[in-house]
Structures are given as structure tokens and as C-alpha cells.
Image (cartoon, rainbow over all chains, first blue to last red; front, side):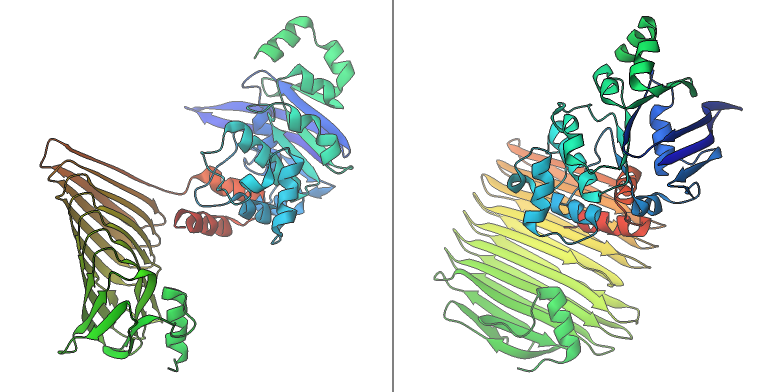
Length: 233
Length: 304
């Protein structure tokens, strides 16, 4: 479970402070998929990067399973069980997919075990296991491998930044089957079809919580104008 | 032949050898030829003045390996060796050279290698350099001269694996018709190390080709200077690519040059130097590595 208390984040804009996130407080429960949505620039990705420790908030507190992680580094959070799948997967020169799976799972996997992670996200493992995770892979391949790394990490809280970008929904639709239960999922998305799959939806607008609650209720309550703005953004 | 602990350690690191291997071997230690073994296909002959060896690779050689490691483990040794390779027509050979220094004071090695290569040959030449021990002024200055015959292919891989305080590599090559020279260089420097490399390749023959790829990582306050010049004197192809990662207060100068002396020559170069991409570090940290571990992994991959 992730709990945010009064999270604020601002950046310097000339002489002034530009507010990106304004006093965000909410809870992301275990065994629950929470979608974060909102227009471009509403602060969605910034909020998830703050949870992962990639960005440091200006003020506020972050708790992970009741432990204050506000001042912890990215890797400390990762070792506690937080995992982050990037919107644009980060590629490497000279590092193989097998090596990345070993890093993610913190063990020297056998080839067959490493292949299992890749097979679960629908790619022919033997064709990929010893390939470098570089730009010669297509965007869709990178996304699926990113997902396999998340799987290998066996996280307790998994954050997906726009998982549908550059990938068909094959992998994402099967998350409930692939991942273990009792995990906190946080998904940043513009897509209505993903919001419908979530248990809860958090709507951000100009860095503030606009709405938060059960997905069916939130989607229903969003005006058609707002829905259009979000889905078309 | 029994090897002492230091020699074993260095041989393992520079040549992946745990003992003197089978086949053609020349093992030089502290300025003296310690051990030489020839085979039917590869003859290794000591020069009469003791300045090095002549290696004759016969036409009958079919992908046979030849190891010529050098170890310097005594302080104050500055060994200069002249090795001449005579590769006969149609020979196919793998030559693994390299020098390891372990000293607490000044020590060095200058290896001057000249390749006289016939026609239709295939040569793989690997040269690894490494220095260990606490002393300063561990110096390695390799010079490689390559005269590549018609229709021959040479793949040259040089790796400077760390610890060398000063190195100056000079490589000169002369390519005849339809010959191909592929060079791959990897250099890691740290502390106050200085590494200079200078490649000069004369593309003399029709349809000859040269491709140079250099990858370098400079840490701490180390300095690297990479220079290359591809000189197209015929209808030929040449490309040089040098990528560097610079960390801390290190410096890298990359100066690739192409010189066309014939309108049919096709020559290109590219150079890129930068720090480690921060998003790569962040990604590995999200998988659980510390920042330092992430940097090391990225460097390892870059130099792989």
C-alpha cells in the first residue's frame, strides 16, 4: 500500500515557482489497480516518479506499507518492492536481456527460468534471451521486455507509466493472470479502456486531485466534455 | 613450465590462460624469452640478437592459435621487443598477444609488432594490456605495423583493461587490393592514467576496406587522446567510429580524420563523447542496483 500525504512539487520558472503538484494526498491499496489520469501536464508522470524516488517532492510524505520512504533512494525503494515500468523503455548497449532479468530478480537465473519471464509476456524467449536490450528491438518488443523485467522483479507495488504506449493490449490485459495477487498496481493512462479495467481512478487537473474513487463511479461522474478532453489528450 | 602466482594471474587476465597453452607459444617475462614452442604450421624463431621473435605462419595453418604473452613483474624493467610476423598466402591464424605488468615501481613494455601478410589470408589478432600493483609509471607503448596482402582479412582487437599509467599506441596499416582491416579498440582509464592512440591506415589497393571502432571510458582525472587518419588512395571504403564515456574530471579528445586522395574513395567518421545517460542509471536503480553498481554495469556493457 502506498500512502501520499500532502505531496507538493514545484520547479523554478524564472523568478517564480511553478507548481506541478499541489498538496496531493491519497492511498493506493494492495490488490487494487489504480489508474491515474488527466490531461497532459496535469502531473501524472511526476506523481509516479515521486513515488519511485526518481523525483524528490518539495514537501510531503510517502509511505510504503506504513514505512516512511520519503527520503529513500530509488534503489532502496526498489529493494523494498517498488517497481517502475517506463513509458519509453530505457535501452542499453552491451547489456543482454538475460542480464537485465538477473538484475531485476537479483539472482543468476538459469536460461530456462529467465525464458519463462519472456514467454509470459508473449514473446519467443529463445530468440531474445541473449540479445542486447538495445534500439534494434522494436517499440513493442521493448515494452514487453520491460514488462518481463517488472515480472522478474516480483514487486509489491508496480507502477506503469502509460503501458499501452507502443504496445498492443495483449500483455496488459493479462496482468491479472501474470502477476501475483495482493499487489498494489498504479497505472498512468489516458485510455478509457484502461480506466475501465482499473478498480480506482485518480483524476489530476493542474496538479491537484480533481476526483478519486471507484472507477465506475468516477467514469460515470466525469462529464462527457471532461471525458473527451482526457481521452483525446 | 611452472608459472609463479603473479604470472598466472596476469596471464589469466590478459589471455584467459591458466597455464602455458598447447600449440604455438612464446612467453616473455621481464625482458627475456622464457619459453618458445613451434608447431608444424607456426614456427616461432628467436631473433639472434635477443630483441624478439620471428613468427612464420605457413600456408597450411588452418585457424590455429598462437599465444605470445608478455609479463613484466620486476620493478625497473623497461622491455622493448620486436616481433615480426610473416603470414604466408592462404593462412588462417589467431594470434593472442598482450602484456601484463605487476610492479610497485616504474616498469614498462614496448612491443613493436610488424605483420607481413600474404594473399588470401585470414588473421585474428587480439592484444590485451593490463597493469596491476600499487606502483606508478606502468607504461605500455605498443606499435603495430600491418602490411596486408591482396584479398586478406585482418581483425585486430585491442583492449587496455586498466591500471596502465601511460600508454601510447601507434598503429600503421597499408592495405592492398580487396583486403579488409577491421579494428576494434577498447580503453578504460582511471586515476591519473594517460592513454593515447593513433591509427593511420593507408587504403592503397582497389576495393580495400577499413573499419575502426573505438570505445573508451575515462574516469577520475584520466586523459585519453584518440587520433585516426584513414587515407584513401584508391577506390576504397573506410569508416572510423569512436564513442567515449567521460566521468568525473576525466578528459577525452577524439580526433578522427579522413583523407581522400582518390575521387573513388568513400570515407566517413563519427565521434561521440558524453556522460552516462542518467535515465540508464535510473532504470537500473529501479531494478535494485545502487548508483555505483548501475554505472559499473553500464560501463561493462559499453566496453563489451
